[in-house]
Length: 272
Ligand SMILES: *[C@@H]1O[C@H](CO)[C@@H](O)[C@H](O)[C@H]1NC(C)=O
Ligand SMILES: *[C@@H]1O[C@H](CO)[C@@H](O)[C@H](O)[C@H]1NC(C)=O
Ligand SMILES: *[C@@H]1O[C@H](CO)[C@@H](O)[C@H](O)[C@H]1NC(C)=O
Ligand SMILES: *[C@@H]1O[C@H](CO)[C@@H](O)[C@H](O)[C@H]1NC(C)=O
Ligand SMILES: *[C@@H]1O[C@H](CO)[C@@H](O)[C@H](O)[C@H]1NC(C)=O
Ligand SMILES: *[C@@H]1O[C@H](CO)[C@@H](O)[C@H](O)[C@H]1NC(C)=O
Ligand SMILES: *[C@@H]1O[C@H](CO)[C@@H](O)[C@H](O)[C@H]1NC(C)=O
Image (cartoon, rainbow, N blue to C red):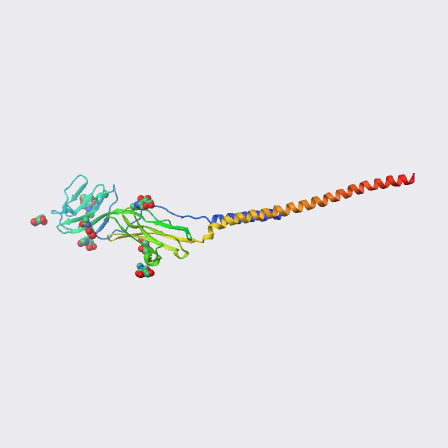
């Protein structure tokens, strides 16, 4: 019975180690992020209306230029004379450009910016293994990306050939790779995205697991098997011993049973 209890306990331990030893990123989650627009930069959302306002007070004479070229009213793009605004009924990625309201010459940079995927809230990597973080962002014009670890530029935090920054599509330094990963590489990794004056970021907490962490579930199972074998071995040994003892007992009984009759017979014979 005690053996069974130990086995159950070991099973639970193994299960716990097994669960603890699992490796992988958690979280993930939604894609789009609220970007706070700043004066002079406006973010377009494809297929949504877009309104560019001009501070010009009397708009009778207003005109708008796109990258220096005069815009003519079309079905999709309208100049609202009454308030000097420029209106897109349904914006397209290609509308990303600099728009200038004339004659005030107030310029608004219209950008397309999309974070395709946030970094997972946490990323677990094994020590000595490799790690790869991907800042999946796209935009027109192409946004710039830089990485921080606990607030420090990664190039300074990890000044080593272990760190490699690669482009992801047109985004320079969009991919961060570290190989091999050291325990000291743990921390909050932030991908900071810039497009003109727009800033957004996505963060992941990198946890570096002991190299033996992956071994624990395996060792747990091995230990379980060994203990199981020992228990079975001991039980078997005891059982065999017991049987031997029982066997010798019955043998003796048989002898004893035999001998009295023999003795009796002998006595009988002697009496005769
Ligand atoms: C437009 O007007 C707002 C307030 O009405 C002001 O805060 C802003 O600075 C003006 N922008 C320009 C480019 O003149
Ligand atoms: C309209 O603009 C032109 C030059 O761009 C200027 O000559 C004219 O006076 C303006 N008219 C009004 C009403 O502002
Ligand atoms: C300008 O006028 C148009 C049409 O009247 C209106 O739809 C739009 O909301 C106005 N924009 C601003 C910034 O007032
Ligand atoms: C648009 O304006 C930004 C400044 O807001 C400037 O850096 C950029 O070169 C301009 N782009 C074009 C195509 O004119
Ligand atoms: C970046 O890389 C990922 C996969 O590594 C890919 O799915 C994505 O389309 C790439 N580009 C952008 C702009 O996210
Ligand atoms: C990285 O280290 C080298 C020497 O080991 C040094 O010359 C270089 O300036 C360092 N770079 C940064 C970004 O700290
Ligand atoms: C990331 O964005 C959040 C929310 O906009 C902001 O509070 C935080 O300071 C930013 N972090 C970095 C490192 O830029």
